Length: 79
Image 1 (spheres, one colour):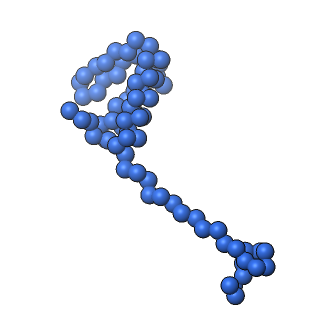
Image 2 (cartoon, one colour):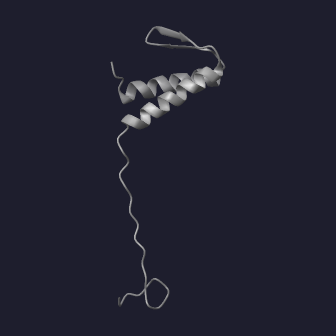
Image 3 (cartoon, one colour):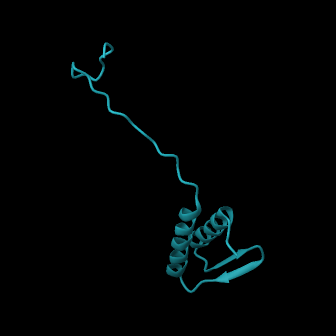
């Protein structure tokens, strides 16, 4: 069963809160997971991050254009 983007973000947020609080257990929807160490939690959070990036909609590309002018100021209204 594939998890949705919202599910993955919820898992990541819960894991981050537990790491910050210094606890090795996370309970989501009545299901408790015990981790061996903070390092284990951080590894799993990195996996969640990778999965989130994979299924997140791509950011719209941004474009910028250089402007050149004969007067060297980049502000030549006559073209």
